[in-house]
Amino acid sequence: MNPIDRIRGGLVVSVQAYPGEPMRHPDTMRRVAESAVRGGAAGIRAQGIDDLRAMRPVIDLPLMGLWKDGDSGVFITPTVIHAVEVARTGCEIVAVDGTRRPRPDGSSLAETVAAVHREGALLMADCATLADGVAAAEVGADLIGTTLSGYTPDSPRTPGPDLDLVAALVRELGLPVVAEGRIHTPDQAGAALDAGAHAVVVGTAITHPATITSWFVDATRVRP
Ligand SMILES: CC(=O)N[C@H](C=O)[C@@H](O)[C@H](O)[C@H](O)COP(=O)(O)O
Image (cartoon, rainbow, N blue to C red; front, side, top):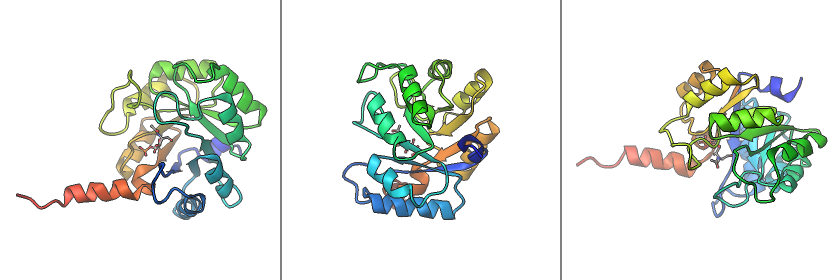
C-alpha cells in the first residue's frame, strides 16, 4: 500500500526534541517513536538525519522526515540539499517548508518537489495559508500540511489547531490535507478528521514532556 493510503484517517506522531533539550538524542527519539508505534500510530514524523537513520531500521510505518535548520524564516527542510539528504535516509515522505517565502538556496518549491520525486519519495508541503497550499499543489506537492499556520507573519496563531485552514484546503484542493499544529487533545484530533483531514499529526501533546508538564503545573498552581 502506498504511504498516503497507509496514513489515511490515522495519527502520525511527531517525535522531536529541540536543541539543548535532554531528550535530543537519536536513541531516545527512536525509543519514543517505537512507543508511539505501540500506541497505534499510523506514521512517525521526525527531524534530523541522525534521528531518521536511528528510526528507519525499526519503524515499519511511513516516516515523514524533515530537517530543521535554524528557527526563523524558512527552516523546515529549507533547501534542495536538505530535502535530498532527508529522502536518502529512507523516508517515504519528505516534509519541507511549503510557504511562498524565498528559500535560502534561491530554489523554488517546484525544484524541491522534483528532487524529492527523483529520490523516490513523496513531498509534504508544510503550509501556513490557503494561498500557500494552492501554490504547493500547483507545483506537484503530494500532501499539504497546515504545519506552519500561526508561525509566519501572514498567519495569525489560533489558540488551538487551525481547522478553518484544514477545511479550506480540503475544499480547494484535490490533495490529501494533513492537519498539524497545536492539536493537543483527542477531541481536536477527531475534529480535524471531521473537517476533512486525511491524517492528523500530533507532536507536543504526546512527545514533549517539558511542555506537557508545564500545562499541568499551570493548572495546579496554588489558588489565592
Ligand atoms: C512550527 C514548527 O516548527 N513545527 C514543527 C514541525 O515539524 C514541530 O515543532 C511541531 O512540533 C510539529 O509541527 C507538531 O505540532 P505540535 O507540536 O503543535 O503538535
